[in-house]
Length: 452
Image 1 (tube, helix red, strand yellow):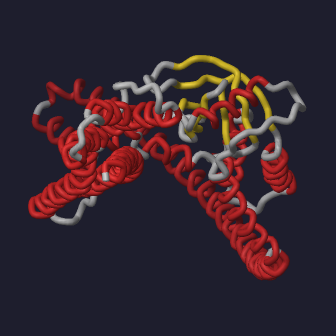
Image 2 (spheres, rainbow, N blue to C red):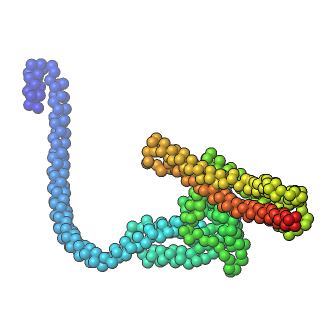
Image 3 (spheres, helix red, strand yellow):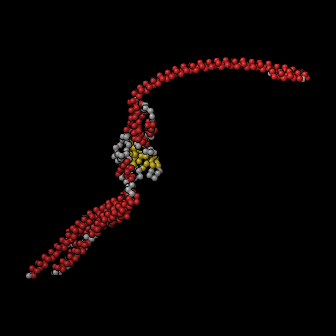
């Protein structure tokens, strides 16, 4: 400002012409300086007021901080007291909940066992909601409530009660081919489920029923049909599977008679063919010897009427034709010729049957050897890790042995029976021939005595 004033004075001294303009400029500067001083005073006043306000605010903040510090100390003291109280209550809770913890363990174990029991129980067919109830009990992570324990007790009581009942209800049954149909089924306790005369298998995974691919024997199925058709309360004999379907399941895996025969392969078929041929020969010989025995018995009872339809009749015809001869040796030879022929006819086929009876077990032994060879080949190729790979050869070995024995035993017994009967008939024919020769010898001896 001083510099401005000095400049103005300098200008007035140097250049009087500009004095008036400079005076105006001076006046304006003076007014502006006065206004700026006023503004500075106002700003200083505002600064002083703001400083007082901030000072008051600082006092208020200090007071609030002090209050919060006091509150913090009170809360810390309360927190410490609560910690001590919580420790005391936790100790008391652990002491009082000791028995409940053991109860929880027993409850969980019982619930798990019950879930397994209900999952495999056929009763679940009628009450499928039981699975959800017991699953909820098993999944609980808290101490069981009285209501949950009552639910578990109810499920177990229901299972016990329904295990002794025979009920009928509608259900879907799956056929072996995959098709399904709706029908009325009968549940016998926890053991079996039947539909008509068919036993059903319970599929626990899908909670459904399926027909067994292979049903039991006919007389067992008859009991199922009787039960399905019986009226309520009527006593009925029924074949129960006490293993709850396990034995019926094994029935599916056990091979049938034809499957066992096919296990014998070519050797087995040959043994069966041999046995059939041998039995046909046995039947033919049995019928033949039976007819011979009947005709010889008739001829023995009526010796006056000789028939050539039986060996004894033919023998007697030869004797009567040569009875006039005086040479006993010639008659004996003629009767012996007929006797040999007739006895050979009586025993015809018996040696063949005996040979077949001897060949059958040898063929079974052949199948045993070939089966064991196949087994050893499987062991060589695949080792002994999987027994199923060796089962085919072992089955062939055993089945052919059984087939050979099954063919040989009846053939051997039949041969023994037929041989006994043929021996008896041969004895009868031989005795009659000897009697005829003795009679002729007696007649010749008497004739010689009379001639002497």
